[in-house]
Image 1 (cartoon, rainbow, N blue to C red):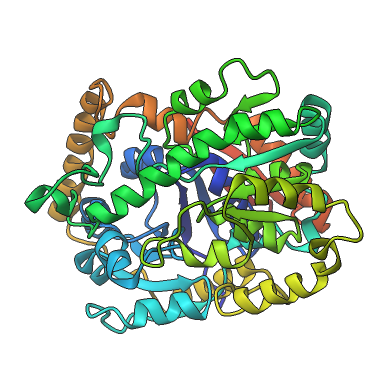
Image 2: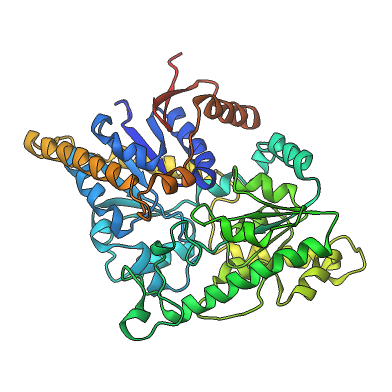
Length: 467
């Protein structure tokens, strides 16, 4: 097609989890001729009045995105979506209530699935209306492919220099350990009747609340045990970005070899560690893709409420003694764990093949851009703009929404509080984005003709330099 490509908007909610992968996707899209805006989702949404009509790649289809989807439609944008959290979920029923809003789904023009499981999950939803689903894989998995094995080499060296040998404990307890406790969607573990149904209509039950609270306490108790049993190692606790660090800092009090920190992308932290410990965390899937030792610590097990896939691709330890023995066995060439490493890797690959596409062949990012080109060629953005009155009203709603968000950012305990927003997407300088792009250029030997500039705070524009 000879017509110039449309613009693409690629928002990221959590800096450390999403941005590097979406920068790769943005660079590939820019290389193909798209003008790309990438960066903090909340900032992008605030500045939507200044965006060209674009294909907007949403990171999910929750009910909270409906208002913004309606605004963008009235401005003439086309919405497509993946789901950052479609790999790990308690059950399809809870997933549909929590992550798949029928009105939001009705506004999407295409979906990009992690793999066959994600595809089947969406197709089985009672409100699925036939929107095209592309099984592309996800850009986050691209970062774990051999082609990019050296992308984080400097970060890994820094971590080794700072912490020496360390055991990484990755926390996934944002449901029970929120920055503001009033924001938990779970009911009180001791609740009954209507109060036991949880908040926000997400299908969370008191049984789930009890299970997660018990697991959280077991993990807190584990920290001093690990510190004592492995005095020559650092114990690095990495809370979820939406978690309150104080509980972990209390558990680490007086323990000089324990560090509570959430910083940077998880990949170098995994690769620099001796082993990763988790329960039901996506980090386990990332560790498996990186062929790195990972253990699911499961002192209590509930088949209804455990996150199945992360635990299945991990070794399992059900008490502190078995966990400690497992860590020691990593280096013992006579241990069963060491001798069965190859079999365990085959098991991981078998588990993951139905969940993640794009691990071989073209990057998932390439496959997504292929689909974006197809959508653009087929006129996913209508040639006719919405009426002037419709667009004017949409701009007005953006500024009303922005003012409300600003007021809420000052309110303690509100989900739009500035402390929460800053914790999930802190300030990202243009110089750091340029450095990341340079590393992509070096590792992949491409993108020399791609330029990145600042669009707004934490928002960046990638364009192809004309030769």
